[in-house]
Length: 253
Length: 202
Image (cartoon, rainbow over all chains, first blue to last red; front, side, top):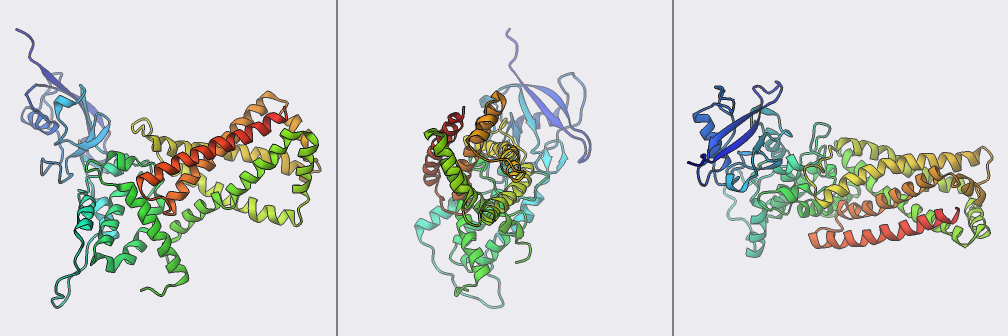
C-alpha cells in the first residue's frame, strides 16, 4: 500500500515574550480541505513533533474563521495573511509558520496587536454622536459614496499592512496604513466629517502620515484589497490643506 | 501645533528636494553639458555662473542650506526603514529601497564633488575644463562620477514621484502610474545629459 499522504509544518515558536525563538517541525496526516488552523488544532490534539517527542501545543489567536476578524494573522511561507483562509492544498510544503514580528510576541504565533487599537483611538476612528439629548437622524449619504466607503470599512485591523511596511519597525513610531485609512473612512462620512480637522491634526502628529515612505507594500498585501495607498495620498492632500489652515488661519471652522 | 513638527520637517524635506535642490541639479547638468561643445564653451559658461552677482548668497540659500537639510534629514529617514525587498519584491518597494540607497550614494558623491571643486576653489584652484579633465582622467574617478550622477538623477526622478504623492498631487492609482512613466522619462533624459557631459571631458 502506498504511504499515507502527510503535511509538514515548520513552526517558529517562542515560549515567552522575551525568550529566544526556535523552530519545531510537525508532520500530520493529510485530510482533504485542511487549512492552517485545522492543522494547528490537530497538533493541539496530539502535540508530538516530527522527532516523536511530546511537546506543548502551539499557541495562536483565532476567532471568526472566515477572514473578517483579523485575529489569526501570521506569516505563512513568508507572507503575512490569515491562517483561516490559508488552505493547505494551495501552499508549498513544508509550510512555514511564523508570528508577525512587527508586533510584540505573546507566545508562539500569538502576537499583541494593541498598538493598532491604540492608534485607532489616537486618530479618533469613530463618529461622535453621544449627547445629552436626541440629536435626530444625521445627514444622508449618497448610495454611491456608501458603496465606496464600504470598501474602506472592510479593514479588520489584522496587522498585515503593518507587518509588510518597511517603515513600521522598532526604529519608528509610524502607526501604519490601517489607522490612516480609517481616518479617510470617517472623514468621508457626512456626520464624521464634522470632526475632520481633529482627525487630520492627529495624523499630522508623531508617527503619523508623514512617516509613510511610499513603498506601497500595504496595498499589495492587504487581504481585503483596501486601496490603502490611495487613502494615504488623499490624506496627504487633505493634510496639506489642513496645514495651511493651521498655519495661516482660515475662514472655515 | 505642538507635536506637529515631524510632519512639517518631513514636508520641508520633500519640498527642498525639488525646490530648490532639484532645480539646481537640472541647471547644473545643463551648464555641464556645455562641455560637449568644447573647452571654450564650457569655460565661458562656468565663468558666467561663477561670476553671478552675490554668488555666495545664491549658493548658500539655493544650494548649501537646502541641500544640507535634505541630506541630514534624509539620513535619518533612510535609517528608520527596515528594508524588506527580499520578502516583498514589489516594484514600488524596490523603488523605496533604491531611493534610500541612492540617497546615501549621492550624499557620498556630492560631499566628494564639493570637496574636489568648491572647497579647492576656495583654496585658490580654478574651476574650469582642465580641472574636470584632470579629475576624470583617472578611470576610478570617471566611474565614480558616472555612478554618482546616475544615482543623483535616479534619486531626483523617483523623488519627484514621491513628492507628487506626499503633497497629494497624485492620488489615484492611475495618476501614480502615469507619474511613474513621466519620472522614468525624466530619469533617462537627465542621465543622458549628465553622462554625456562627463564623457565630454574624457
